[in-house]
Image 1 (cartoon, helix red, strand yellow):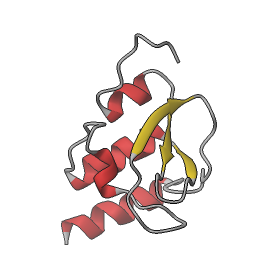
Image 2 (cartoon, rainbow, N blue to C red; image 1 turned 90 degrees about the vertical axis):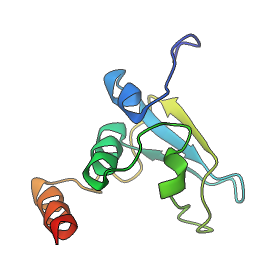
Image 3 (spheres, one colour; image 1 turned 180 degrees about the vertical axis):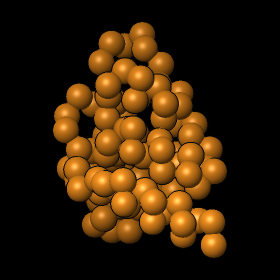
Image 4 (cartoon, rainbow, N blue to C red; image 1 turned 180 degrees about the horizontal axis):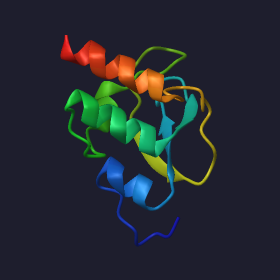
Length: 98
């Protein structure tokens, strides 16, 4: 990614075809998340999509602590099956409405 491009919002990642490289400073675990899905998930919940606070709704799969760094990456997501179908989104919407 170019150094002069700013990623202030999760939408910026999706606009620039970048995914999220999320790093846990506690255990050094790294994961790649699909930026479009994460942004849509945050919007469904009504959460703030600012990159500076997006980590507050995430957890490390290894140590369960909150990750501290989010960077753009061209790499493919680690878990492409997460929210992979329209049925998953429909279930989430129904759950949030109740």
